[in-house]
Length: 95
Image (cartoon, rainbow, N blue to C red; front, side, top):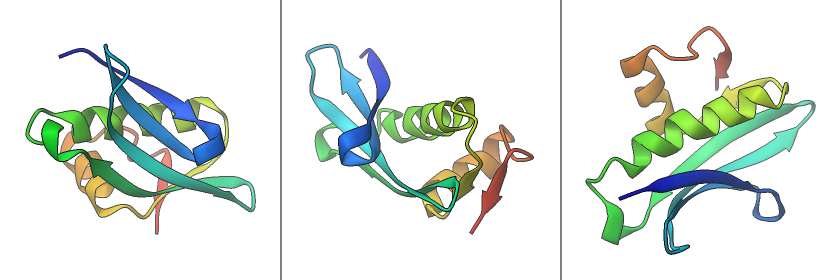
């Protein structure tokens, strides 16, 4: 399975999309007072257990940081993923 993660700004989320255009999961965010808060991750049941959540965590945090906006995380899934993998720990703030 090949997934790409792209920002869907009108819906305030990053979406993992498969090669046929199906949204396998998403991370919701809100921009507030100069920072981007990643607050919810959801994976479609048909894609569970296939690493979609991990791809979303890595890519959404990476893309949010690349925008130059400070990134905050309140999503428990993303927090656990970051702590487990050690990526970007010094670049995000946990809420």
